[in-house]
Length: 344
Image (cartoon, rainbow, N blue to C red; front, top):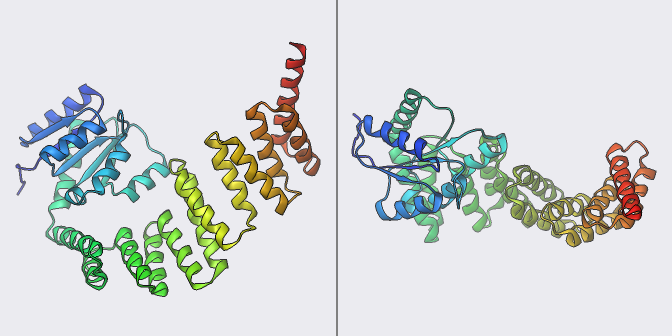
């Protein structure tokens, strides 16, 4: 039987769409429907009134829907509240990141009223399942026990959940507990289970690498940390995590050339050109014949407007690899810009 006392929060920047969703929910018989036009307003409403179900647009002013989701999931009160994300179009990396953050489901516009109703009803049925409620209760208990440092009791709570359904985040939490207790072999098993369920679970790969590093296996540590960094970079929305993992790799192997190069790419994207140049020069000390590093270095100098240095390193890139088309194109652009500056 449907519980019509459920409180909904609809978060959408478009007023017409927001009002349409609110009206649809009221037509379904739900009287407690709150609305917000931005992520910050939504969080204010949540803290004041609470909610049993959140429907949020992806593109919101001030803080976007993904950030709102992460804030919601970080609060014990809302850690298991169904969260439906509404978007125009999402990429694979965005779906992965939303999944890691704890989204319940994603639906893409345009949405018919009937489709909207069916989606809400299906998620309500999922959330009200007795076993699901038991699992949610065990999850909250497990988090409380972790905060209290009651590791074995927390593990028992998480194992109760696994008897109902498998979840990557549960395995991750169990792996974290085993890591704290320095049971690295058991931790690796749990983190690997997490990556089997979610192949793009970057934090789990990172933890596997850290476990191998603690065990003194540098080769395996570097492999899994590199995998984590690659996934963080694919998302492009979490360069800080990628940078952190890459620095961990350098602790394992200080002469890892691809780390210097990748750090350079991150810093260049952030406009930190001097930091990027420093990393590329470090990479060249390890591998002085790598045309890709010379090319990346040339891009930095080009963006800085230093055509003299850009020309030098790009010529070196082309000398090493005469068929390197991207380097040839950028070198021509540098030469044209230098010529136009001389003419003016």
